[in-house]
Length: 166
Image (cartoon, rainbow, N blue to C red; front, side):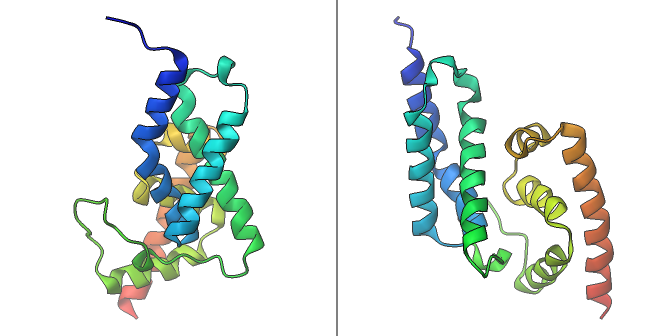
């Protein structure tokens, strides 16, 4: 049995996570073609760097970080940067537990949260990323990610329950 070289491991990691990267970008920018282009740009940007010092185990999160930054840059350049949950295809989810009415209420409530809190909630709930992954992608500590999530969820619950009652 031959041992895989670092380049092969990096290529396999990228290929294995490609659909996940596209979905991650798509949730943030709301356009499938642009998300695919953005992921392609992120991979090129990654491969243009010297990958000899990069641990193959960290490639997945490193690419998420690049994609996240490119999404942020794109959203800054576009006026309307609100992506509604019900406008995003949930094809990769086994079941879509949100009905349209709940999705509308959640969108309205998420828009009222500070971006730093809503982004952590989005990454954890929609992207299904762990707090370790989120902290790496956002360059914050894991405890900061958890506290933003907790604070945002408390605000979201209050806003959501007020929306249900009205």
